[in-house]
Amino acid sequence: MSHMMIKTDRRRLLQMIGAGALGSTLPFGMMTSANAANLRIAMVVKNLGNSYFDACRDGANEAAKELGGIEIIYTAPTKATPEDQIAVIDALIAQKVDGIMVSSNDANALVPVGKKAMQRGIKVISFDSAIAKDGRIMHLNASSTALIGAKQVQMIAKTIKGEGEIAILSAASTMTNQNSWIAAMKDELKKPEYAKIKLVTTVYGDDQDDKSYREMQSLVKAYPNLKGVISPTTIGIRSGAKAIMDGGLTGKVFITGLGLPSEMKDAVLKGACDTFAIWNPVDYGYAATQIMASILKGADAGPGKMVKMGRIGETKVGDDGEAAMSEPFTFDKSNVEQFAKIF
Ligand code: RAM
Image 1 (cartoon, rainbow, N blue to C red):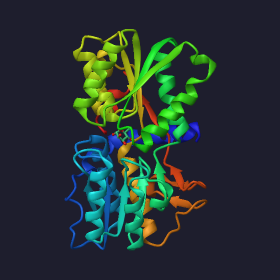
Image 2 (cartoon, rainbow, N blue to C red):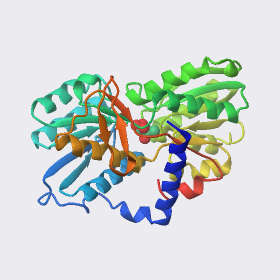
Image 3 (tube, rainbow, N blue to C red):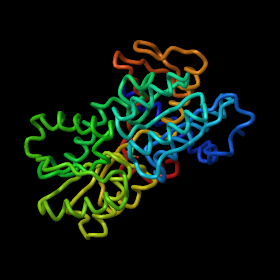
Image 4 (cartoon, helix red, strand yellow):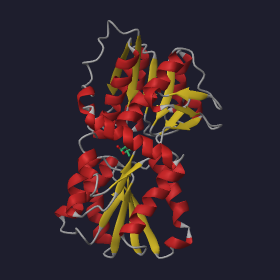
């Protein structure tokens, strides 16, 4: 993916601020009524109460409005567990929805329910966190996994000036996306420029604020020399940053990872986080919905095919049945406030 793409995306984001993009992200239920819709597409996310996914929902509603005749059903379990997510999907199968887009809490555990839905004629794709190959038609990654992993290591290395102990504060241990990013981080850490950085441990906050906060507190107790934490989850990074600030550790321990500008603004301005990254989650929900809509209209999203993502452009499905949307953006003091207005 080229530098040009990042520039174009950034320009478009800036245009969105000017064009009042916030006004176009109406809450679910205000877009299309169930009766008027021809197609019902469910967006099943990891858990409720996660603003990252709420932004994905806003993008899904935007695509539904643009395309017309589509109702988005946004749903998730309260806790990010595979069992609860399977129950949610089973209920959607019983409701005979047309399509299901899932951010999975466990790649393999969701395969049987994905297969069951597809056997009944329901189209299933995953986005954000993949269902393993047999349980869906295709998976849309936010960006290249290697790039997302490497970027997070690069950010912490820059902040701690290439030296010291670091830890990872992840979501749940079963989550496909976090696990593949962690594997990519470990690969990046093998490079000689990180020889003085030591990854001491990986802990799991399960994408719950209170557990992530406590895991961060335990980390700094267990590793008094800890300098940096990478949290590849918007829940982990916001809770970890809060624990740093509440614990009087600002300037001693730094957190980076994947966060929302709206939730990380304070931590960046106060110095608990130097820099962090994320893609545009509104675009992500929009892109997944565009792909689902074209599959429902007969498009082939199999390996080797190009799939259309509306205003985002097109992407190619790889041999593994996975495609990527775009590149992540990086945020720091210079732009966090501006982007906090969008997501
Ligand atoms: C959390 C979720 C989600 C992930 C983002 C970065 O909101 O774990 O799956 O993609 O963080």
